[in-house]
Image (cartoon, chains in turn yellow, cyan):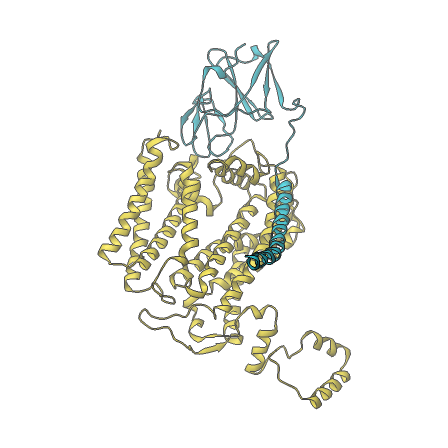
Length: 469
Length: 166
């Protein structure tokens, strides 16, 4: 399409030259119709435009968006990790057997008998866990730079769907080793489903493929993990990248008060952005390799349905919710809070805002209220967790006042926080919403950290050095 | 009037066919969903003969009053309470489904996952478990205790009518 026009005589000359070429050269030409290393800007545009994978990317982009500290390359890192996961996942599929009798043995045989088998599993494990964190940070970056306004509104929702798929992938993959960790983590997580009103039992049976965790569950999880989720990821990633291109690249950074430039100075995607992305990818892959050489993915004893380990914990990215279960009525912890949070995030782009895209933290007031949210979350969440311990140990979470009280306290604190921002900092609605998102994420982080490092035997609250003694 | 009705007729015919295609498309999607749910729906596990589900525990005399006997294959505990009655308690915690061990020193079931505990009758001693341990029906035939593990009875708390007495 972007190719130069060629006159009739030149065509004949070119045809003649191609007929004279050797066989290999003609095959090469049929695959790569232009020099693969472009030397002029025009050729570079042509390459980006006419290569299947590159054409998802813009041919040129605003120069200001190149700065690393604007995006931190988090979206690109997610893609690199997903590709690493595909590659190592496919390799492991050649060895893994999805049946309760054989699964655990196939994992130990992968680790002990297959050359590099343990390394491949380690890369898969660390990439998967890092991906959850990177995807969350990516979400935070897009949010804090206001990258969900205007043409990017719907891409925010696409991104949230991608995050959901990543969580489903992690969760379904957790069961596959069929060790004590995975068996009981999945038991607990799927048992949470039973607390959904009316359809809970049905949901749980659907997730498990029966009333208990059996070979049906394992086959179901394996199929979702190895086909459904990867397919969904590929389709939605393509949509996600394509819409970034259609929005003319990522949001352009500016200071609050600076006007949006009408015609920002641009640079070519190739080489300016692509080379930066390749550099980030190389550093990330090197890091993952080093971590995978020195740290092994955990593998417990083989699953034993007769003996729950103590404590039995969900995967770390669900420990925040498991922590909620210790404080709230189950319906509130499993249904109300997660659904409300998911709805809030999905609807974020559709509230009415001033147009403030491209500004990190919006303004001085935005920075101040964001900081207030971080401090408030870091201080109040642990206090609440400890205070809840002082509640009568026999408090019955599933009924009456003690089921509602924690929610009332949390809701009151939220309201108080919003009131303070509104009154003292005179924060406009945009900045209040921003502070609330930060507060929610900080609270989730504190809950998760509590669940991972501060819950010991019987899920009792204790310090990390007291656990496992 | 006439013009109006013909006009409406012609648009109706065209839009009818258009709608028909939409409906057919919707039907095809429904069929696809039906097929998918049919495949995903949990298949009934061995409950047909009932023979596998019945566990013969043994003669009544073998179980002392106040004793708890684990049946790992049946995934339940047979408890004989102080007055000599029998209860078959599912070993699955009603909170999040962990397997509950009997701690004989403390004389109660303690869940390792979230520290719920239950007494010998399966009643909740400490939360977060929301209700008492599930029951399997117990029968005593010719002095032999039999438990039907194919049936699970959920309950909120203990009632004397749940006990089977010899």
